Figure 1 (cartoon, rainbow, N blue to C red):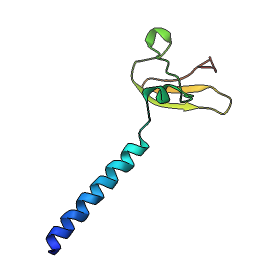
Figure 2: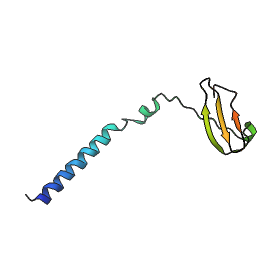
Figure 3: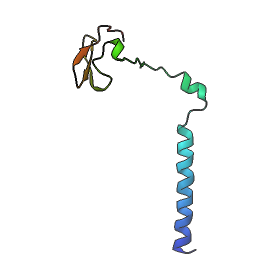
Figure 4: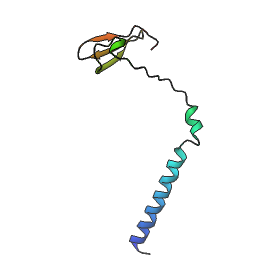
Length: 83
């Protein structure tokens, strides 16, 4: 067997193992994804909600739970610490 033929065979075996590894890492069903505990929520604020402008440049949360939102116009703190 030539060196070219054996390197091609090794490459095929490596690809098969890689595909098996990827398949083993995939969730078994979409229900498994739905059962994951997500701790993040999304809330959208606009100018009518108190933002000085729509473009947010920075977001920071303080240890006491306040969310500071920075735009090019101003800094604002969210008064709802549960958001």
